[in-house]
Image (cartoon, rainbow, N blue to C red; front, side, top):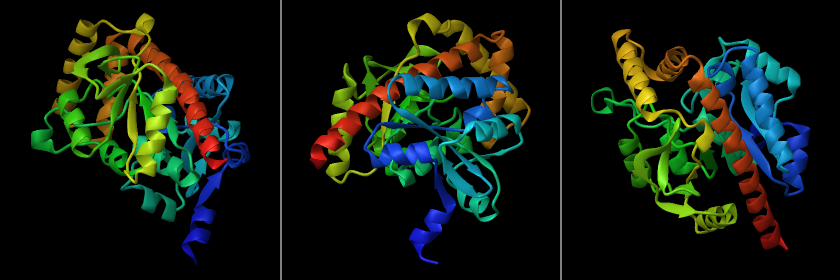
Length: 315
């Protein structure tokens, strides 16, 4: 079977998404791990639907990505969203897992890395998420570094996020991104955000006030033949920012608990998020949802700006 036919059989783009892409309209990718591993049912479905609604309200088309029955689905309908939300046992799938999950015709929730892969295969250039993965604390001994960083180094998708997850070693995460030539652009901020807080203590490569400038940089980056994506760091809205001391203490306790209980690899993030939810009496989850919604809005604006530039270039 030729590669194009094989891809056609395994990549399913929802009609609404396909039409938007064919017409050069803005599309924003969304991940599915946040549905299966980030929140419990039915809150996870409600949150996913809210993110999609906000993207539509800003004039773009949402495309939540997941693997269902061995097919990479770009854009989920209501039934598929509900299916993902009700099945917390669905495997979390990163780049290394994707070939076997597809080959075995199984289900998989896409991480940042695999959402970028699915988006790129479909021709989507903007992706909204909560926070990217990165270098975990103690990585000098564990070598625990998220595949998200390697994906950003090679896949042409701009990721709008509230920085890196605050459970990580932010400084080392930024060093790895720099090594691999991934631009880290602050949207209306000179500070790299730390997920629940607006300032992680580290800066960004460049600060821009208008998404049109980011869109232009995206277009030029890829037309210059520079591979890889871009991190668009968008801080959590000030009204929902958490107390840095409280969240910092809670994260330290969660990391210690994970180590003590032998939690490793892809299970670390869900474990720590659940710990924070309990420790902050639900405040961390509320903040998590608000930063995702904020990223969805900004991503819709960025996708519109990029689509406009591409349309102009084609004329």
